[in-house]
Amino acid sequence: MTRQTQTSALKSRVIEVALAHFSEVGIARTNVGDILKDANCSVGSLYHHFGNKEGIAEALFIDGVSQFNTNLLAALLPRHSANNGIKSIVTFCCEWVTDQSRLAAYLLSREIKLSNSAKEELREMDGALAQSLFDWFVPHVKSGTLQELPTGMYVPLICGPTLEHSRMWLSGRSRKSPRDVSPILAEAAWQSVKRT
Image (cartoon, rainbow, N blue to C red; front, side, top):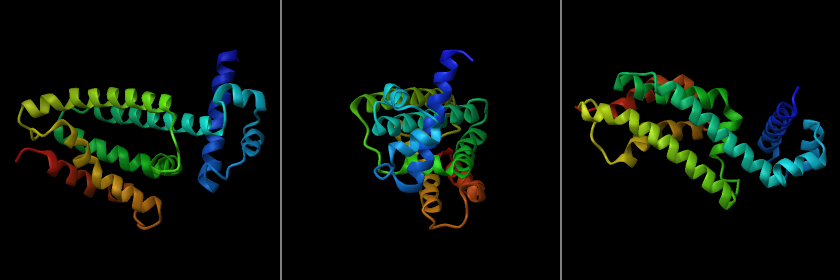
């Protein structure tokens, strides 16, 4: 195993262990010593790669957003029809939240405080995602299949109900998982943006 592979494996292990601890007791009450022990990581390595506990929390957040964005685009971009594409966005989100519930809850929590550099990295990631989504949407708007809306309105209309249901399910206020209701949410998303 190369040094680069070992470093990558160590970072992944620390992030995975941190997610388990943050999910169980929150960031503030998580003990760095527990992360070190469970991830089989030295103090020096942890502080070299992450700086501190807040650095681990940021890395986990950024890694989670990156995974989500990459997989969302993988679900959307092969779709050629607007109907299938819009519904694939919602279906992916519902399945991802259901399958990755701890990470989804972490990403939706308000507990993490991001540094300016992390905020900038996330702005760049959001910009890249927005551009990819825009490139996919434009031909469907020009063809008259999708409504012509202000650019910033598509994601809230398509994902808003899914996001709200996901929050309800993650907090225990809904028994039905996002996957259970994904056909309903996908159809609602399609109805909200299709040209009538």
